[in-house]
Structures are given as structure tokens and as C-alpha cells.
Amino acid sequence: MKTLDRIDRALAKVEGWAIIALLWAMVVLTFVQVVFRSLYTHGHFLWANELLGSLDWSGPLVQLLVLWLTLLGSSLLTREGKHIKIDLFGTLLPPKWLPVRGFILAVISVFIVGIMVKVCIDYVIMEMEFGGTSLFYLPSWVGQMILPIGFTLLFFRFLIKAIHQGTLVIRGLSK
Image (spheres, rainbow, N blue to C red):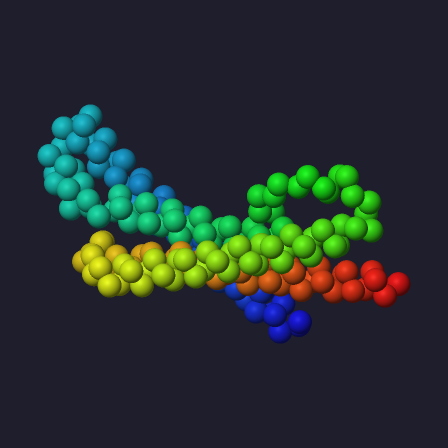
């Protein structure tokens, strides 16, 4: 269990730095687009429009970075227990049953996210077979690799949560 926790902490650091880098890249690329568009529209600088035309790749790249940011952020938030939850029984159950509820929810989440990992892998394989290209003439599946990667990270987070909740349930039963 200590090994999983160490891996979890290391992944969280990498995810945190990746999120910061992606966010900065998105802000800079978007800011540059806005500046050039404003210089052309309001200042009538033709060179700004030419530069804007040479940055036509930045819009689709920002869209792809949003997807990466979303999935990395959701993994990090899941680690911290701040992910979106629909909790009907949290206030209705007595406190001694909360670990059991947490364990059941974590196991269900592992199962559902495991299905999503499989679906995303199949999707990327289909994209590889299709052979389409996207930004910078890279294969389109390269950017879409965040789907299986992101859901695998979520799978790992929920698996750790299930193990932690399972140990709480076992300790509670042994008392």
C-alpha cells in the first residue's frame, strides 16, 4: 500500500506541473491571438493579420489542451476527493456505515472507469487504423491519447480509494 501511495504522490506532482504548463500555454496562445486580432481590427496593421494567419494552428491546439487539462485535472481532483459526487446516502446513513458506502462507491467507480479505459483504447486504435492527421500533420490519435491516459489515471485513483475504503471497512468489522 505504501508503494501505491508513493506512486500516487509522484503522479500528483507530475499532473500538477503538467496542468500548470498546459494552462500557461493556453493563456499565452490565446493572448497572442487576441493581441494580433485587435491590432488588425482596431489598429489596421496588416502584418498582424499575416501573423495571425500563421498562427492558425493555435486555436485547435488550445482546444486539444483543454481536453488534456480537463482529464488531468479530474484525476487530480479525484485524488483529493473533490470530484463531482452525487451523494444521496451520505446524510441518511449512520456514520459507522459511511466506510461501507465509500467502498461500494469506489468499487463501482473502478468498474465504470475500467469500462471507459477499454472504450478509449478501442477508440484510439480505430483512429490509428483510420490514419487521419491533425495539428502539425501528426496522426490524430496522438492528441487523443489523453483519453485512455486520463481514464487510466482515474482508474488508478479510484482503485486506491477502493483499497483505502476496504481497509476501513475491514477494521470496522474487526472491532
